[in-house]
Length: 154
Image (cartoon, rainbow, N blue to C red; front, top):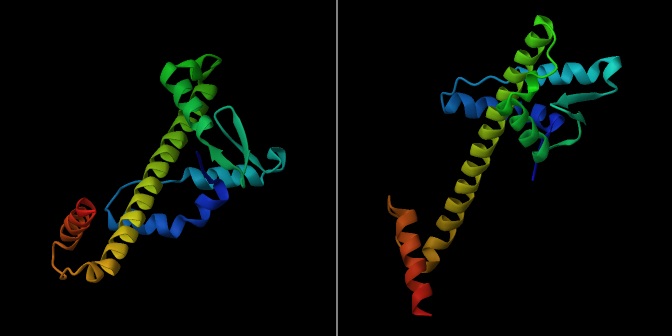
């Protein structure tokens, strides 16, 4: 499974902002601007890095890149070639950006789950009347029970 590309993440900013406000989250994702800036630098050739994985802004973020970088950070191997305090600061900045990316991916997962829940609820509302049920505050529970009853009769 791949995650959205950098361009897709940037295009989703309004929806993400709304979700963060509605759910009173304190998350930020300033790293997106840093990644976009990097892709616009001449030396980057339109690419940015997630750990050891080089990506263009249109490439979906591979699950393997996320897992590989998690492992590098958790194992401490990210510090192996750190020779001075400037490199250490760069690693710390990278880890902050990476953690923000992980949190953003969690938020996107929550948003997708919520969207699926709304779709299921709308579907249930659309067929509830056809199953002979009445609209109640427990619509979803009534509907599930009615469907289970109908299936077990077959």
